[in-house]
Image (tube, rainbow, N blue to C red):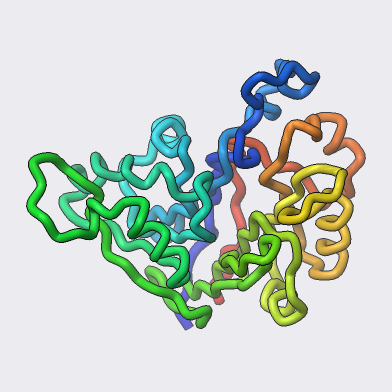
Length: 265
């Protein structure tokens, strides 16, 4: 099998669909001066073998990319087609120009259909007077595939009634967000990891997202070496919430950098 060095994962955004602070809210977390409570929409950058692989293009992508110093994208993986995960896709246009070519994008047929509808001008084949995103589309059936020498496994989870993808990168890490439930077959696909990201929206029940307690139970079941919770709303203040977590479980926060794995798969 291909071998690779450790992954470097940058958390570009750790917030829920409306971000934190939330517009119009004056709660303690939204007014917090702790920078870890400032949460853009959820996304990560995965770097390995000299490659930059993005998971989701949030509405905050331009700022996230500038803050992280992203000057190149080698591929984009999409978890699903909701607005907070795709609406920044138009902002890859300067990277197309800088790189001199199209960027491969990967997702389920349903997710890619949504992207084609939302960004129809990028796919209609018509001559343009201005730039538009240049993309090479790869539909994923759910089977593992290789990406720049890395085995990547789509992991099907449920976002309410909507099936969506998380992604496993070799034995180093997996990124799962927006899950309300993980089927037993997908739990098996998440075993043996160094780092696991999971959605943990808040304490109270939500029909399409995991709660903090539910995600803690998933960590106990899956048993990664380390776990990070993301897609966090303004119900959870970083400092107080993290203080009550087990030592191997942390809250993700924007700009967090993590090294995962390193022995290859």
